[in-house]
Image (cartoon, rainbow, N blue to C red):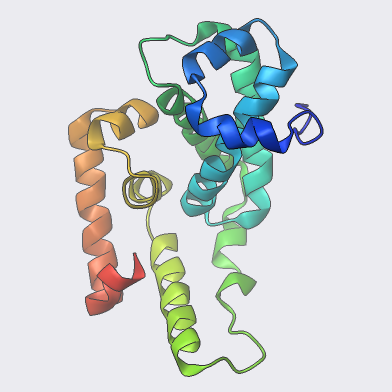
Length: 200
């Protein structure tokens, strides 16, 4: 199991994270430099967590898949091709790990009652309540999409990847990504109606 970072990275490391040369960092990870791996883990944890939550819609799975992803990154760092973006390579691993985890989950879990859509017990101000209801509707709509369609939506709308990069991450042709996006948008438009743009 990969040791979770936290003790080996100080605030100065994370402040300089934006200027980190990720290719050089990967070279250090390939040489089994644990500090470099901890920095890489810290850099990617928030983005991967967001992506995996959006793709799986199962919060309990996110940390497990993220740890599995970073374990693969640690073990396979020597196979990374510096001609590709580090983020594309890592998100490709995360995508495959998420699909694997979803295949292992019992289908009954998804069809059963889920507390994620439950309304809060206390009354919220009207605007906050409306946003909460819209988020619940969006979550329910996203659950109707296939994992591949959810991944395409997350990578596009929330992480800002272009179709070509998404195709590399998902290991499929660009046209397949476009087709998944088309059907996902159609489905969300049907389920959310005029609220679709505001929800996303």
